[in-house]
Image (cartoon, rainbow, N blue to C red; front, side, top):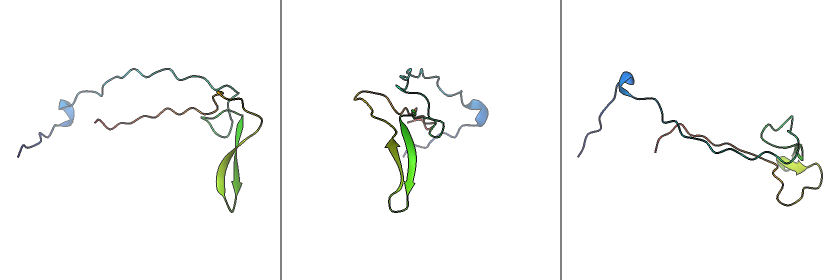
Length: 76
């Protein structure tokens, strides 16, 4: 069985700098309540359904209404 080497904090190099892709822009204006969404949607609540997102107007197919930038600090 191979033993894992334990590194001291000063032996570990800084994390890799990975170039992040440029995200597209939302098709509508920014939403003041949902920071990663456009103003084409709003957050609503109903006791029997809980929280949900609803359209504030007609949204054409292909319009970008939500952007998420996922990150992870865990190295695989």
